[in-house]
Length: 162
Image (cartoon, rainbow, N blue to C red; front, side, top):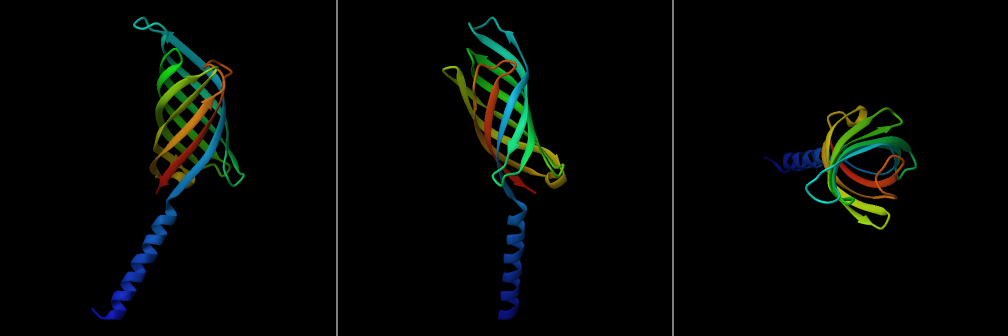
């Protein structure tokens, strides 16, 4: 191979890598949500042990000033308000694109509020998120005990790979 062919091949490989990197996106946003549904079953094994399901919905705020809607439906396994949860989540943007992702994490009680954090796995999407895969992390705060009417906010960082 001559030097020009090697350089051309290297340049082509470099440009292909740049294009692939641009297809990936670190999606950062804050979801501010309100509990529309919360129901719990008291378990008899440990004092204060409950298994529950809840649904929150609200507004997603992105760093560029755009907004969308977001929701979560979660199962909780808590002892006196702290424990583990798994949720199915959705984000809808103004252009109609949707991203669906599963989250799991831990909650700890902090006075009347709760702090939570965990990991994310993308499960699907449509529009600009069609065929997306990826993962991420989140942290959040629920401002009162988990019940209908409780408000929370979550800061999401989701690595969208296409």
